Image 1 (tube, rainbow over the protein chains, first blue to last red):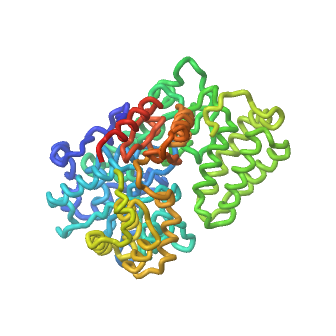
Image 2: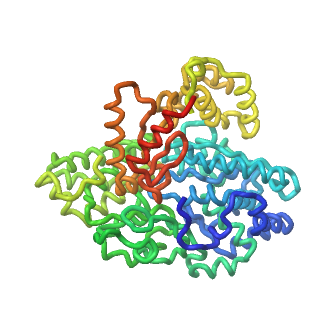
Image 3: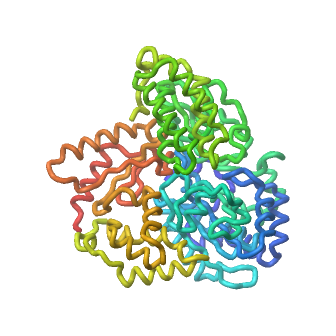
Length: 413
Length: 165
């Protein structure tokens, strides 16, 4: 397993053993929070300015919304992490399970949640097994308790291989025992899983909570900038010398991550482009990487995928479109048909059977799909395609005119 | 894990599984919440979610069979047929493809086609394994392997085939 290349707060206490975790301060934050009460916990997190590492919204604001809801509340730790390029949750779940558990219990304490779930995607079997062990150990040690000393159940759920299940509304439907179709008629904080007020937290978000409680809001703020306090785990992969996780402030520029931290492109090749936030992001060509990651991915989500000069951008577009076409839940027509159409057009262009009018059609479809879906999935699908057309039109035109661009076909399937 | 033929043919949900399912149902605001865990549980034990199993499961949840089937059909974890052989899952994500994932897939598909007998292992491709730092990544019998090579996977498959049981 690749360890983070930079030791930061999220990685400094990596252990699966409960005794070792407690020796390093694990569950101290929970003990303090249970003693001081949920309002004190809320104040600390609000002061720290922690933003969710999934959706980017302020954690305290989300807690406040859930706390105001009436009836039994439900909290979910989201370990679905289904997007290609992301692997931070896997590392956190496998190597810091007690931190994840403690974070979940802290969030439950702050919000008064009665039901607690931790969803892990089925492909993360090692993480699931480790979490089962960790939960059993924590339960036996009497650590799974609420503010009144009552035992709290944390249900570990083997989730789904469907990428849409990482989207919070889809996840809540999945948890409810239904097909994971995001519901547009419900606001999760008022009516989520089982119609109960629900809150979904990204695994990394949960892992930041214990450190903030133990060390204070000022400490957390000092790790980042005023606008983006704290750190995040950046996932870097693809054509780099040192693929892996890097815990750094959100203000870190993309070029620093790619060249200094991940060692740049190996074997003397030249970098061609980078996807800064996974398959939902706009492509950044070489020479346009000196941008703070906070501008490219405000919540830090997604993975940084580096591509060298051999990479055909039409092949990349096909890969991205195929992924979104296959993973669309199919519930709404714009996404179901739009992602399918993008994929078909791109495959036609890729194999040299496309016409010049196909490029115009591709651009037109991708433009008009904006905001048309029931959830953000179709926007995720169209954004990278439009940016590839904008920055690498030559590749597409060469495929249309000459049947190919002459580049390596590493991405061809 | 190899599921025995007897277990695959077994149509009924065992009393042990029923007790497990009842226990899980009690941990959710509504029993239906335990449906996905129950499906994973039964697939692991039976290798395949037969129609009779699903009908029986529907009655345990007081659901119509079509409601259970809707969940089964939605999730790719249940749409790949029988799990009666060790499964080799290859990642077809962008990061793995950039690091030789397609060559890996082509070589192993060729191995399967060239085998004179029915392959002792099932080959599937998945959109992402969440192991981009270990690209190209594969999962063999629930164990993550990566960076994988044709040689390393062939060696692991041979060891699996040679293992008793």
